[in-house]
Amino acid sequence: MSKCFIAWLAVGLLAAQTNVALSATSHPNIVVIYADDLGYGDVSCYGATAVATPHIDRIAAEGIRFTDGHAPAATCTPSRYAMLTGQYAWRLKGTGIARGDAPAIIKPGRVTLASMLQDSGYKTGVVGKWHLGLGPDEGADWNGKIAPGPLEIGFDYCFLIPATGDRVPCVYVENHRVVDLDPNDPIQVSFKKKVGDEPTGAENPELLKIHPSHGHDRTIVNGISRIGYMSGGKRARWVDEDMADRITSKAVAYIEENQADPFFLFFSLHDIHVPRVPHPRFVGTTAMGPRGDAIAQTDWCTGEILAALDRLNLTDNTIVLFTSDNGPVVDDGYKDEAVEKLGDHRPAGPFRGGKYSNFEGGTRVPFVLRWPAKVKANQTSDALVCQIDLLHSFAALTGQTLAADAGPDSHNILDALLGENPKGRDHLVEHARTLALRQGDWKYIEPGKGPAVNKNTNTEVGVAPQGQLYNLRADLREQKNLADQDPQRVVKMKAMLDEIRSDGASR
Image 1 (tube, rainbow, N blue to C red):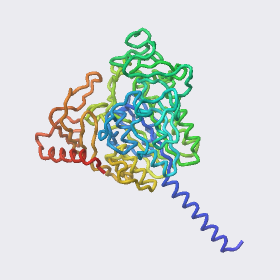
Image 2: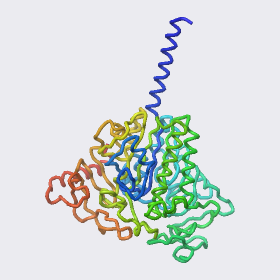
Image 3: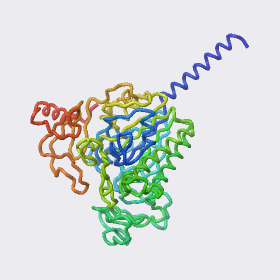
Image 4: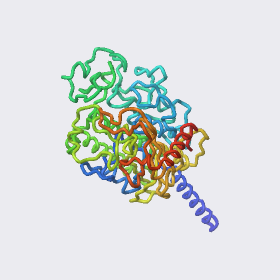
């Protein structure tokens, strides 16, 4: 063998290795684990002591923990919409908390996080809670093909909880069909009037194993009354206690089946949303009752994903982001001892408010990211980051240029997400009952109408008839309204918020 050929072969092998390395770092696997109603203070790496979350903590220890990471909104549907589309949900009507029978909110043809990654060669899947509507405007056909849905907006595969566990229909949807549906027992769903003759929580409370504290008193499924009416589909109905196991096994199977290609998995947990009915093996593992036990179950689900990546030798080149769709709520509709057993635990950590709130507890959530091949371990970042930025940040990562109108509120903050830049966003609009503007240490909440406290959930929602201004560096709990002391800053921040609202884009 000639020296020339050996040299040529060595150069070729080096080039091939370089190409593989470049491909790996530009197209890592991406797993977004999305908890539901999990607060900043509900995770031990953010200060929780009443419950341990070792697997979530592992992500933080092996990567970067953000102290100023946000969901796009203080409730679920708008956060999910904004994360996937890169557009603030308040810009579009019909993006509030969706009914269980809502039509598809994200229409086919829209650029989404999934479609962008699909175009870049990724396999794309979503497993778990959807809550972004399914089917055409006239409503989904639960007994036939259910479309449009995730498969029409960039996902190759889906296994869904259609809305939430406290809303009918209480069945799983895989791709375009209800799982295990008996055609001789068709499903009917209504949020206006009773369908069929099945018992309800309001009429038959003696049949309940968990009683509602407010609302949630319609059709009974698995001993739990829900929002809305449902009949039929008995063979297809889920068992709440098995839900975490079911969706986690589907998520792990998705990783196993797509390990040979770059893949994106949106693993959308149901926990710790109500009804909180953890599997029996988690019951009693904390002193906080079902809410605490559901947090422990959330951590287990996360651990199963990490274990699968380890087992398949995918850990080094997989981005894992763990975060939550909004801040915490304690009593959200069922008498599950969450209030009575809360003790000294502070679900929102040092922040005021929670789910439904314009205060920081509404959108500031756990936000930890790991990518061993690229991100240094044991980092803590104060950068302002938001889930809405995943679209443009991951487009930059994969070398894609998006259309000018795609993700109008999504910014490229990839350097901050990877821990390479201490500065993230310049500003952020927080979305709850009204809008609030974050800019550096300052926060402006625009005036709003309505009660200051949600009586059902006992949450301070941050609504006041006058504008509010807080300096978060000096006043993290938003106790001292500085609007009267600094009226010029109020005028400037109000003008900026008004401009963002009227422009239709903030990028």
